[in-house]
Length: 93
Image (tube, rainbow, N blue to C red; front, side, top):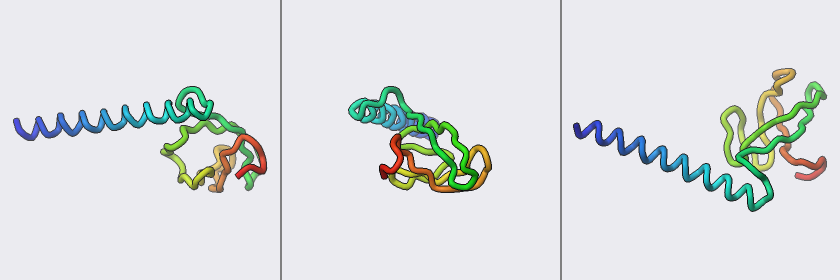
């Protein structure tokens, strides 16, 4: 019975932490003028030179490495890994 209680409390703590993080992301995005959880930017792959839309949640990543305002991930068109800057305007770091 004690082990079950520990698991229930741990699951509740994880759920509370994830919920608080999502609230923080939404509030911080709204302060920057972003609605919802994520953003969509138009990126061009430096390897194949083709453009694609990339949807992401600022502050989170499951399929890429975060590098400040850039991400390191595989291009969905050619499959090669590259660094992609996540800015809306070209030339802005």
